[in-house]
Length: 261
Image (cartoon, rainbow, N blue to C red; front, side, top):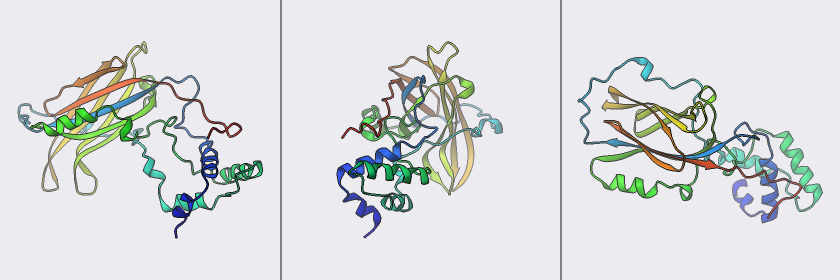
């Protein structure tokens, strides 16, 4: 029987304390004091009946590049590899008393590379479907003729000025070959100068294919200053953007000294 299956049989308190120990590892993605966080949800959809030939789409290479500091959203599934769970199963399991907790801390210090995601406190981590607000909207788009959802995600992040903002890598729609997708590029969210609005900046492009060859790339570039807690739509002849942001209060970290079960 695999370590992952054996792990599922551990007592609840043991698992909870071990998870708290691992979550205590430092991470650049976790909340820092003084940051203003927002929850973001985005849907990108195709106007399938749109006239793709109504404009002479510029093909300058600058439109079709992902910034070097861009990152993909993380997923809870990223840690569910056999190697990671083998390491977790091999950690000290006698955690019902203080000696066990101390042993777990020592194990964490010996293997700081492994840390379970924290849905409440990690930035750029995809949220589960039960925390999505666009479910009905996406279903309506899929049922309507002429629209097709290319990409959807929800996550939380600290909001910064534009110079420090992290672009999010976008790959959506149908995939052609190993790396090419219909929709590619990045989204960036940041404060306006006075920090009274959140700005969404899209640097996307839509690929048209013949077989696995790209025949045309259509830039989808736009910018919108947004009020929080409102539903926003950015129009484009080919790809529409739905977005919503609202302030998020990051809960305090759970301390090993006072675990809550």
